Length: 185
Image (spheres, rainbow, N blue to C red):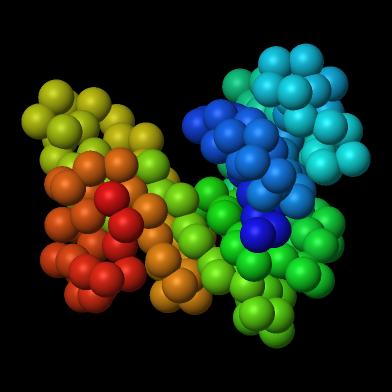
C-alpha cells in the first residue's frame, strides 16, 4: 500500500509517517519542516520527503508579528504541495485540514482514497465556541478567517473520510449534517 501525507507543520504527522515508513507504506510526506529533521528524528529517507520551507520560515519570523500571513502561507503551501504529490500508484492521500484542498481536487483524477485529518471540531463549531469564550471574557476575538473556514468546508466535502480525535469532535460533524460513516474517530 502506498500512502502520502500532506502536513503544513508537524502535528502528529511525523509519528504517523515514521510508522508507515517502518511498514514500507510511506510513499511520500510533504511538510514545511526540513528533510534533515525527519531523517534525524524519525528515520525517514530524504527521497520520501518534500519540504516547503517558506511556510515555517515566514510564520516564525518577525513578519508574522506585524502581518497576518496565515492565509497567504496556507494557500502557498497548499498550491506547492498539490504540485509535489506523486498521485500515480497512490492508494491513500492523508492531508491536514487547511493544507490539502488543491491536492484533494487533483487526487479525484486518480484512484486514491482521500483522508482529511482534522485535529479538532468542525471549523464552524470551533469558531462558535471561540466567539462565545472571547465574549464571556470580554476579549478581542482571534478567529479563523472566513477564507480558511470556507476552504476547510470544501475539504470536508471532497474528502472520502475525515479523522477526528474525540467523540465530541465527531458529533460536531454529525450535527453539521455529515454521515457518521465518513467520520473516523
